[in-house]
Image (cartoon, rainbow, N blue to C red; front, side, top):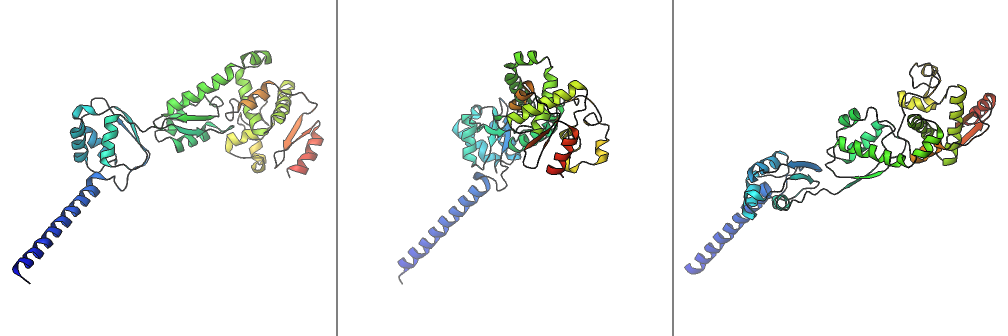
Length: 324
């Protein structure tokens, strides 16, 4: 091999080694600084205040785990737009993004907040509602929601909603309550004709919601319960115990039936002090427009079919047939 060939081979090897080193360095730079962190915190909200500099913004995002390198992000922002280009707002990071993509979003004001579809089923308590909201909204505080809705049981309308991921507990609670009053507003004339307070209607509707599922059964059950109230008979419904201690009919004991709680409708006559859930519009309408019947007793079997009786003796027979 000639000296020239040997020199060229050596030179070529050095060039390859140099290129390989550059590629390794670039790969490390991308891995360490430019790509998203391995433990990227999905579904994270970060609020950027007006007037924040590139450096302070980058440091905040580094602390939140959104980026690997505050230095790289700040330099990209400055190169693209300068210190004054960052748009204030609450940014939603649902999946990992490169530092360049983060920079572009900050400069464009792309908050990334696509509305989240949340369905609140009918007949849930506010505690159950809070759990569903917490599962879907990253900025939702259950304790705050429960505190501000202490006297709102029954008035948080069950429906399908579209919330921004940044929605807070107070905002969500207000929307649920406002929706309730919008739905009820059209029923004001019916409420006045019923000669009953909206509070009593919602309390009874929450019970009707739990006792029957079809519109017709709800109307019959509402008629029976209004009749019991009118003649001074205890409501004697088991569903209030679900609100009191979480028990269903099959779980109740004789001791439970002696509980002196105002939610025990066997011990205390009249309505319980508050609704036991947030009823549907159908249950509210059934309570407003009950059906008269000769019945004074009812029970639902395991299939949800409601059986009616005129006398307590008949009721006991049906209970033996369909419940025990």
